[in-house]
Length: 386
Ligand code: GLT
Ligand code: MN
Ligand code: MN
Ligand code: MN
Image 1 (cartoon, rainbow, N blue to C red):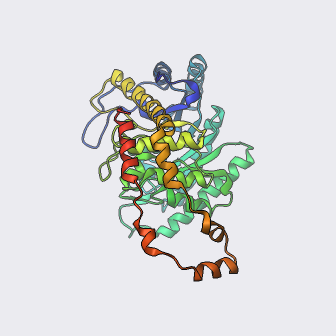
Image 2 (cartoon, rainbow, N blue to C red):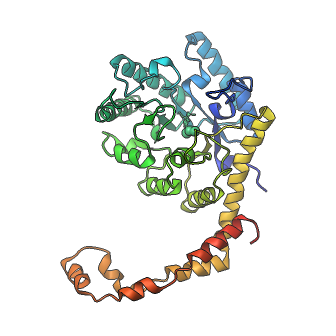
Image 3 (cartoon, helix red, strand yellow):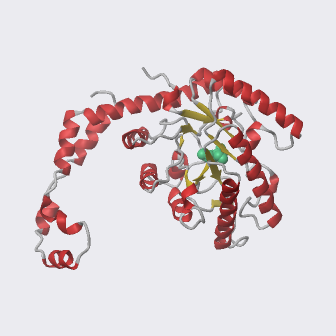
């Protein structure tokens, strides 16, 4: 049974099921739904939670009184449906003020406004119980490097994150930051283009312990990268604070397809990894329905994301308990232990031993590794014949 349950921690952004199907060449194809309507839609399909940008919930030009009314109604819908708000973020990309970036803008007034907007949006997220705060710098980039020194842009981004970490500490919030990379679109090039760049940057912050990453499948696929490898590196560094699940063909426009709909094999190994290591954060679907759909199609899309995840989770269990696969793995990983004591740690003795050891190089290269067989067995699990 592939019914989503609260313990699966499936979440969607208001902007995902609320996407109206606008693209650079075409007008919206769906009428906008209110945040309250979107909460009910997500509850109907069985999601656990809903995430938002400040302006998904409260329009940028709302009066304080309007904001209060919106928040009251939203809270009522959350209480009625039981939906949680695990993550929040700031829209620092839609308004023309951010056309040259927010934290990396050349204009100090824009950078100051971005800080103000983010502090307020953090307050809003905390008010609704968000534990993770995402930073996706979609506009933090350039079309031409004539316009900005990239190392200055990196310093500005560091200053902003240091400022905002102190803000969180000062307010005694427990919310953590998750940085989301994307190589391009909407800017020609975006700074910190991959999860790996983000991981390296985090270590240069004043409070690296407060900051992790939010890798997105589509963003790494746009760059032609293996998403799982980036996720594994984040996990291994204790930095996988959040994850954006969707799908994307490499070398194309920003597609945000339904999870698993393009590279099923990559999706399988991703789900297997998250389940095997015990990743306990939300499974956030940052995707949207095809432009061909009405809101029934949007529900089909959302249900499809969760259903594919759960099917792949079952396939992963099948893979983990398949005797032939496990026998192959045991064979592949059967180690000849004679040299392992020497390669764990550098000592002058170990170095001397390895330096003079007589290796049988031909024998090392001769053994067939049976990876073809292992991969084909994996494919047959995915194809449903095992
Ligand atoms: C936007 C972007 C996503 C980010 C969202 C958070 S907004 O839709 O394409 O990848 O995660 O800002
Ligand atoms: Mn996208
Ligand atoms: Mn995206
Ligand atoms: Mn995303």
